[in-house]
Image (tube, one colour):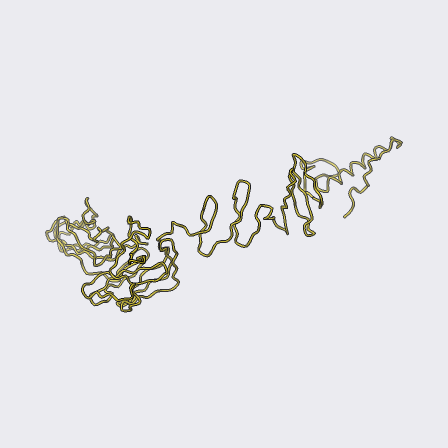
Length: 398
């Protein structure tokens, strides 16, 4: 690298004895020296003018060894660290901060002692940084005492995040799909299907097969905090949650020592067989075939229909089909929650003046706790209605 300026700087020149007529040469020499010195880092040309003249193109900091603090000032400089010029700063109190290291910003200079892959840097105070180490698989970033922290969100308590859907396998068995749920705040993950068989004792919560010979009914299915999935028999959920709260949708059955998170149910006949084929799609369970009519009625006053053979205690809403017949009259059919007030859903409305006519409609109706709905017709003259359950809602326990 060539010396700057080209002509050596000499503050003794011009001497007092130098001829005045040589002054113009000295002035031109001086201008050139100033330009060459400034142009090392600044914008300047040999002639003319410009709006960027005097501004920095770069800032070249030569390596220093000892830098003294200066009152009411801060100093930025380069200093050798392992034979590499690194950027440093010193405040008026003599505090020295190394800003760069090994071609990167110096985390230690930001007040962070060390770093590793996956770490998060955050402001732990108005003028300080801290490092949060990487969390564990499946954890979420939360806030604790005003700063970031890894943990399990409390809002995920009791939730079925995905999967754990029931699939009819045969009259003897049901399949539970893999998924993730929270048993209270404990995360339970299942990565493979689980098959439960009615006749296998180890597939029941207490290791003993229940018999339904005395009467058909629902057999509930639950998951414990260790991820075991078992038949619970006719033990429907009786606890809202594991903290003793009884308000809200009931999710758990307590067997006296353990809590079982109820996830579904199958209907079992007196022959100890699953007697209804079904499939689950998220929050709804649908029957493969239309179930037999619950009622063939002609009532013109509100009349209840018991749906508990088709809707388990974990649900209070069913998917219904209504088939109405009429002749020479207008058919109007209403349906509503048993015991409620108001006109209900107007689910059928039709007229045929020449022959017996059939009207069909499907809709969802909320049931009462006993899984009953009500219906009524506008007239019983040549009118009747068949009510069928197509499925039931389980979103309340998910």
